[in-house]
Every structure is written in structure tokens, then in C-alpha cells.
Image 1 (cartoon, rainbow, N blue to C red):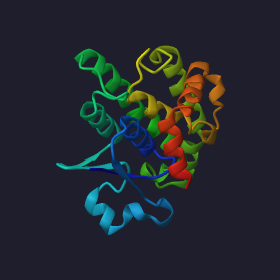
Image 2: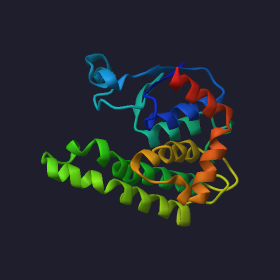
Image 3: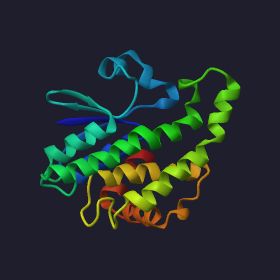
Image 4: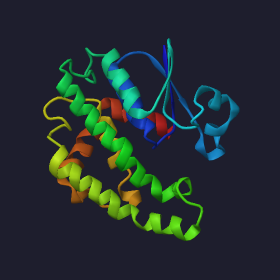
Amino acid sequence: MLKLYFSPGSCSQASHIALEETGSAYEAERVDFGIQQQRSAEFLHLNPKGRVPALVTERGVITESPAILAYIGQRFADTPIGVPQDAFEFARIQSFNAYLCSTVHVAHAHKRRGSRWADDPAVIEAMTLKVASNMSDCFELIETTMFSGPWVMGEAYSIADPYLYTFTSWLEGDGVDPRRFPKVYEHSQRMAERPAVKKVLSVAAG
């Protein structure tokens, strides 16, 4: 059975939703960031990066959200979260998820994780002040050039949807009104009504 290590509200939420969408049995174990559990010897043995998500499979551990999402989509291809067999369409999904991972997540991380890039408090403060602007720019690009609708890739729900939903949920905390991006905001409302999303959020709140 698959086992996902997650932390509520983090990017691991996307993988959690994707697993729930499959309708298959899996385990989900919360990693408590408040007590630095991700830095414990036990967790670092599992994932030396000290981050979530981490997905334990029968063949080993997979880390990084785009990889985990792709794995879930391929392993459960006959479920709502299954990825297309067409190579180009799958690449489109991967391109979107890579942008979220490499650009949007980094822009967001500058608010609370500035020490990853600088030691000077003034530099960290400057990075923090840029977060709202950078996140706005990222979501403007998604809204106007990358989002097809009603789902990210168009009519078909995909592994890109829980990933975008998770990032959209960070906007208000980053000082950005999500309603500035009508298509993305409507997508978040649509996602919130999915049973899998409701289940994952209830687990996170418990």
C-alpha cells in the first residue's frame, strides 16, 4: 500500500488530493513542522531533503510533487486523476506543474524561507516585500496564458488541478486577493466542492 507523508497546507496537499481521487487504499502520515519532525533522524532516513511530500511505494520512496503527481496519474490511469497516454498532452501537464514547482513555489517561499537564499536580514526582508508582487505576476501569467478552463488543461480534470488549487490557497497569505484572477478563483471554488478535496481538508484539520 502507498504511504504519503504530508503536512497540512503545504505543497504535499496536491499529492494527498490526487491519491484520494484515485479511490484506492493508501496511508497518509502527518509530518509536524511545528516540532521540526521533518528534520528528525527517522524522517531524514526516509527523505534526506527533509521536506514533504514523500511517497513510499513498493519499489522505494518518491519525492518532489511533480514526480509524485505524475506517478499517481500513471499508476491510476483509469481514475479521474489519470494522465493522458498522448505524449504531447502529458508534456503540457508536466510543463504546467514544473512552472508551479520551479517558479511559483520559489516566489512563495521567499516570504518564510528567505534564509535559504541569504543571511543578511535586510536582504531577507527585501525578498519578503517582493512576494506579493512576484506571486501576482505568476498568477497573472497563469490566468491569461496557461489556464484553459474549466480545468487547468481544459475539459479534462488532471494532476495539474490539485496542484494549482494548493498554490491558489496560498495567495491571501501572500498578500494577494485571488479574486483578481477570475478563472483561477472560480477553479478554486470548483475544486473545493470535490469530495476528495473535502476529505483531505477534513483530515488536515483533524
